[in-house]
Image 1 (tube, rainbow, N blue to C red):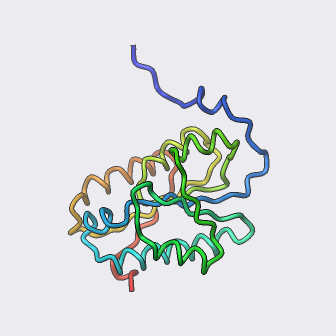
Image 2 (cartoon, helix red, strand yellow):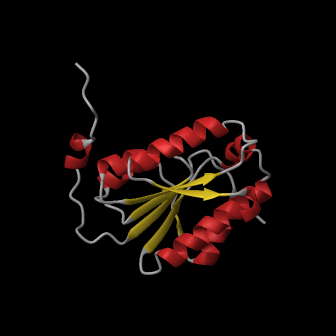
Length: 168
């Protein structure tokens, strides 16, 4: 027998607020992302700044958080978060588990084709999920990431294409 994992058991462990006001950007390992996306670290920093500024403008009445990837060492993102008034919050556990243990039902989650976007959306269907996809055909895993992003889109995760020309 094959069973679809709808994460119902995990979700049943939480007691979530009826008034979500938290928006989370789920970070990535910046150096690996830049290498696989065939962009420089300066372009990566520009991409993150673009997305964080859009997050701040789109969710101006919400509490905003940036959760770095566990192996990410990029300090520029931390400084940018401080400049923009976004809480930089390093976790010691997977973001999905963190939400359940802390009874957080986010208003929105944002990321770069992260599996956490998919998992959280399946666990918490009312969450607005935004997947920023860097549309760079010379990227190492372009086709795989494009297909994953399209699959996410079929699962109610908004696809936002960003072109190289959008990075300064």
